[in-house]
Image 1 (cartoon, helix red, strand yellow):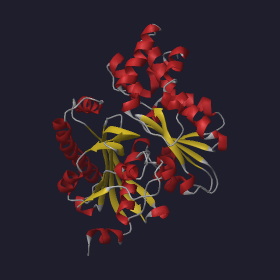
Image 2: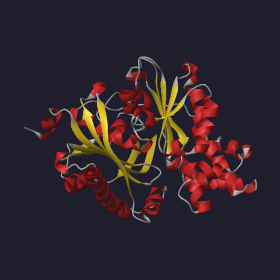
Image 3: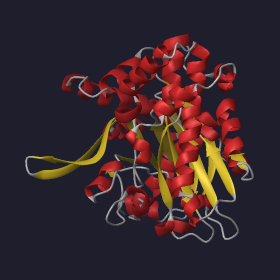
Length: 394
């Protein structure tokens, strides 16, 4: 019996989800028991961990992710290196759950994004959208002995979509409700928002990247304090927000774009950091104030996006927050002030640790790929139609 058919006949299936996000902290790995498929999907998270990158690797990834940087030689080698590291993370989470690799049915790997160009460009008479995630899935499959699904974004782009966001499919499957409307906010390097209204259909889902999440904050913490992140937002809480710097940041044209839209380091990476710091230096701000203002930029851009693109169709009943930013006290307090009567709840309340959501998502997306189920959300990505995402390595 063909392997994929054999997997499809199992219920439940055991899968691993892998991702390294725009914060480039390491590989998030989730071991998930997946029941059924499609809109009947149910999951149980068995184990989660973050496998850290070797010292110095984050900086190299940042370097080759900067437009105009990185040789084809280094990108080629990095693809294989990251495949090895992702495979190590997969085996580590499996063994951490005291399971055996041969008991796992599949791996879903997002990889590490190094370039994302969702806007349509013309090249030699062809219109193209492009994205590049490293972490060679053939290496993952060979090192683990487990069928691996990867490279999820290009299929959506081939249908005219932006290849992002992809998490809204998980949001719809797990969080749709006949009783309430929900907004799901993930604050990773980039912040993204999914709105699943009461009795929502998949085609009614609204989702988009709101702008920077932790990306600018983390970069400033490293530059100004030689720390990788602002623990609980303590530095931001000790500073004051500069309205002038905040307004300058909010003038970025991305914030005025209507959905569908997605973004990354190309918009809010090194170039944005340099402009932000230049303006802060003109204003003679101290370091704590700069971090406070960057943190408020994240919260304000989320709130403004909600006001512009969600509120016209009515408020939601609760905001469910995940990602590293959910542990930043400054961000959460600012969001609670803005959303006022709308409860702001961590996704942990629903049995999924905040850091685990995106890894869980890629286990679910891989499960759908195995069944041949379309797993993009065209209303979120702008694709012309639903399509099956991912490439399978056996």
